[in-house]
Image (cartoon, rainbow, N blue to C red; front, side, top):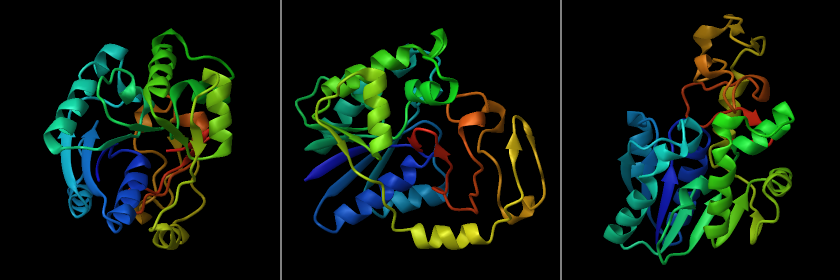
Length: 247
């Protein structure tokens, strides 16, 4: 079986996707990664290419797009790559990526987190006008998917509170083969570093800890009030938890 999986290099989806693909490669699954958003590091690219084929496209992730128009090319990119690579199944790590698909292939859509549930949990409200389009895009993605996956029961419940009933919604917990190494690295990081808005303590900055990969975007969904401190220690994938799930 050949599976096309969407991936990004700026959040915990990278660790989830690479670890999942590595494990399933051992049982005969062939992988094609379609990367979206900011380009990966050299180390990330090498890690993915040891497992499968990596193709990168400049289209944004939905939470980086200013409007749904910014995602207009993604469905065509997915379908063209799937046809070219003889793909049997699509594994999409943002449900919005399934919204406009017109392909006769099974689709697994995984919601690791999303803008509407972030606003519900952190602000206690629906997204403001500039973000409201995410609800419709994700809803169409859920409806298109053959199976929808959430990483926890709490996030699955948040999805159905926000979007209504979702057919074939399943909870599949995240796991990582790098958990032991990550915990060892985190143990070496100082714990006296906190983030309040744009201000942060600098103690221990030489040890590799920093509060967020995007400090200038602390007021975007996923940053600031809804996020805890991050210790990256040079390893992609050691990330904070959202209030509604993981990223």
